[in-house]
Amino acid sequence: MTVRTTIADLLRAKHEQRIIVAVSCYDYTTAHLVSQAGVDMILVGDSAAQLVLGFDSTLPADMNLMVALTAAVRRGAPDVYLVGDMPFLSYHISVGEAIRNAGRFLVEAGAQMVKIEATAAHLETIRAVSDAGIAVMAHIGIRPQRIGTVGRFRAEATIADMAMELIELAEQMVRAGAGMLLLEGVAEEVARIITERVGVVVISCGSGPGCDGQILVAPDILGLPADKPPKFAKAYADLGARSAEAFAKYAEEVRSRKFPDDEHSYHMKDGEVQRLEELLGSRRRANQ
Image (cartoon, rainbow, N blue to C red):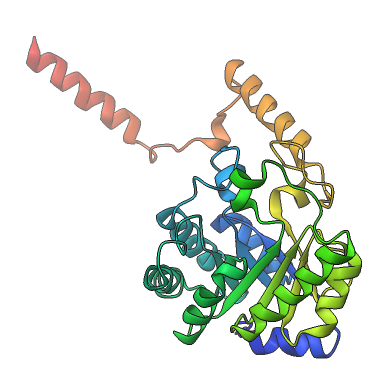
């Protein structure tokens, strides 16, 4: 029987300089495969709005969707450290609502931590959720939920003044109670400095190799993105092309009546076809 990974295990990995492997995925089947690969952590990201539902941003994801997907991932990966992503407007309206929504991930979905895309304005929220006994991953750098205010995304902390601001923000998040940081699209040099300066686990999402761990979304890893993936994504397979070929082959066999064949069909027990024909015959005669 395996033991579920905990935050203590991830902190130990940081101190022992063992790289943490994380994947973002959204469904039971993929989560089961990811867990078999020995991945340390799964994040159920609000990018599901784009990669699962086909929206052009993460904003349409809501709490019910995210809790349902996180619960499915937990069933597929019962022993992996699991993080649920707080979607847009789930923690913005009030601290009380943020705590209540964060708690849903733990109680209803089996998550061990929640992720919050955070600015300095969210320090009180980070502190309150953490004080409520809910572990928080603070997501800084590129923050996809702010697409409406920035218009398009660009690498963060590429000049010294911006770098200092981000380093200070990271330290503020930790002081407020964040138990983990996710740095998205941050200059490699700055991400390395933050990782060295804070005592919590730091996960890189397109922020270079100097962090405690790395994360990519499962569709990008498998070569299944619906749209052009970000610069930092790397495909480790070309399942997109192979999947299209498989669907085309399926369609061809259905149209040519090659599928389903005898092997892929259920059959009546011996003698039951003849008995059924007799019953049908009796009914026809009775109706004449």
